[in-house]
Length: 458
Image (tube, rainbow, N blue to C red; front, side, top):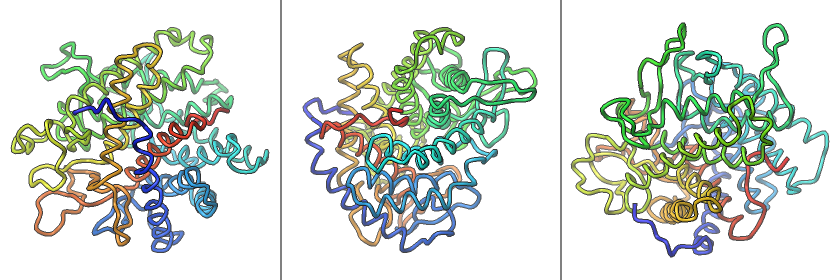
């Protein structure tokens, strides 16, 4: 990646304003074309959003996007879309015992609504706030209950694959537990045992950092600092780590770029949250300094890896070990090419990663100024690419906002245009949402508005 150290947030002001104009039209088109009760929208095919079988993990991004649009523009029609969609469609997901996605589905909806109330963006209502907070507490406890113990001091929230499976994606959904803890919620287990949500948050983050974000210390012969693996497999009887695996990457020993991006943003965001947690609350987890240290290590390793492996403009190919990359020559030295004939790029990974880079840069600004500036400028560099052609969707016939997103390359789920060999030109709900979220983050910096945090300052 070629970082532009001259770029400032203000340089993105015009592109971000244009993004919101395009974004509003996309949200309105989705509401017209996919009425309430339609299948959960996941990604586009030929420019139209479609579903993907069993999965509903993207539903919160649909209605959360409308709430971000209101936040950015003040247009009340989007507040009503987001509020109505949350209350009508998200209730069943509050107690969804079968997924690890509560930080995606619930924090993007109920969490954004609560944040808007706390920030005074909508009229204060104690009963409305308590409604949202009850939902968030419930979601946090359900997420925390999905637990695999690795012994007295370790464990993780297991993925939908089963109790043996640790996914890197889940690091970003820990914000559900963080809000629940901030609201005073605990998980009540058998016999009335009270389980701290903060403790489970920290333990899960530690497992993710230990097993999925490589330190470069030779655990296997492919061990390189910052390599992120999608999945870890454990023996559920003994708690022993067995092997690395992947569902959406090329192999367990290569880095699936969106998994890397989840780690970048997830750890950076939790570091910001932990900065607000009193040290006494982390005493049983080894102390605040130790917890922050392992999260900071994982965040920095992941961000450095991204910078080293992404193309010059900050956009990554879908997996850094994908076999077709050898046909692209020195792809890191030039802007990513989403129209190449060998491997797809994943713009959704860039949207997630850009926010992770910006947040980590902000977090480190008083600790490691040189490293902080590198991450901050890398985040701005990626945002510049994402808010321009060929990534920002300008066609009124295309329902997506961020083009060249990829969902599941190994399964071949993504649409391949006629005459081409690899997916390109399509969007995803998570990519569109995270581009909007990153744009709102930068916009608030430009306008010197309150810093955007998922827990809403409450």
